[in-house]
Length: 265
Ligand SMILES: NC(=O)c1ccc[n+]([C@@H]2O[C@H](COP(=O)([O-])OP(=O)(O)OC[C@H]3O[C@@H](n4cnc5c(N)ncnc54)[C@H](O)[C@@H]3O)[C@@H](O)[C@H]2O)c1
Ligand SMILES: O=C(O)C1=N[C@H](C(=O)O)CCC1
Image (cartoon, rainbow, N blue to C red; front, side):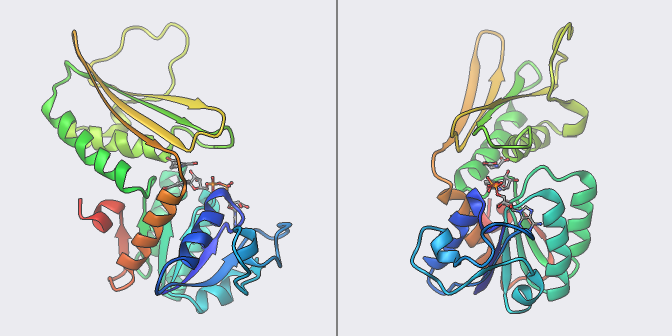
């Protein structure tokens, strides 16, 4: 499978280049960065801490997408929406790891999935997606006597909050409870908030250091508390999941898929 990595010089971009280069049956077909990026022209292998791969980082996705079977995209919301349209034109796989997309962005990805095979997830790791299935089950089992709170911590460079993973876990909890997350989500608490409303799903966000990604889903009852936690310490988890998603989507029909489809959860 010939794969393009966009956002090539990012924290995830470099991991994705490593993952593609190390995967049997996969070839790096291109490495794309923003116009004006200081890494343009550099060898993608060198950029990712590997031996040279003979793939210079470029800023024009069109020829790269035309010569590829799929694109791995951990960039920014506007970029992912742009690349989804190009992936649709090229009829290729588009794995979207980018988080912080708006409802409008998500609608554009849905439209692009008429022609592209898109796999989108706020977290590409097996562990988090397994955790989400557990959270769904626990939320379905415990009534509103158990308050659901989601705590997440990431590194100081992260620019969106709550994390895509926290929202993914919140959606699982809401599905388990049979409610819409948007109707129960409380992501900011400040000042005289009044007592907690039964059935709400709270989010708390910590940022600092080099934390790769830590998430806890807390079910707080009267006299007891259940806590389900996932800690990631290596971004290679996410890159491996993204590659697995691309290979899974390659033979499939156009559509918008998630990691639960890829992992059979
Ligand atoms: N789904 C997951 O499993 C998962 C895991 C880790 C990170 N993420 C998400 O991936 C995204 C990136 O995270 P990161 O830590 O790598 O960030 P980063 O800032 O290190 O990397 C983003 C890269 O994208 C590039 N970029 C931005 N716009 C671009 C464009 N139009 N064309 C080409 N490149 C462009 C930037 O220059 C940068 O190099 C974030 O949204 C993050 O939440 C998701
Ligand atoms: O480092 C990041 O940024 C991460 N983003 C994803 C999220 O928003 O949940 C996945 C974890 C790491």
